[in-house]
Amino acid sequence: MSQKTRIKFTIGELDPVQPNLQMWFQDSVDGLPDNPPVFELPPGTSMEQAEEIAKFLNKTLISFRLFSGESFAQSR
Image (tube, rainbow, N blue to C red):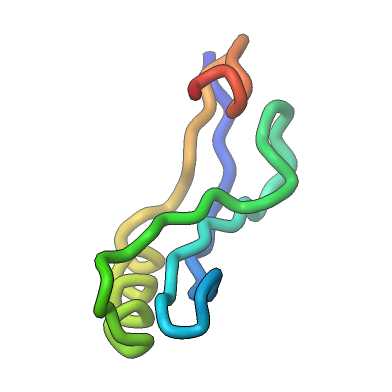
């Protein structure tokens, strides 16, 4: 059995010139971290390109699934 949460991708910046994608969980599911997973983009990716990627992912992905008995930390 698994639990799933709706997700939303946003743009973040760990470095002022390097955007990244953050995946925010929209529902409460045991085992998920409080902070969003961060996806690093290739060097040189512009803010506009990052926004297009986030838009595409938000349009095409609807959920993140965590299987019962696992936590996000265990999958590392």
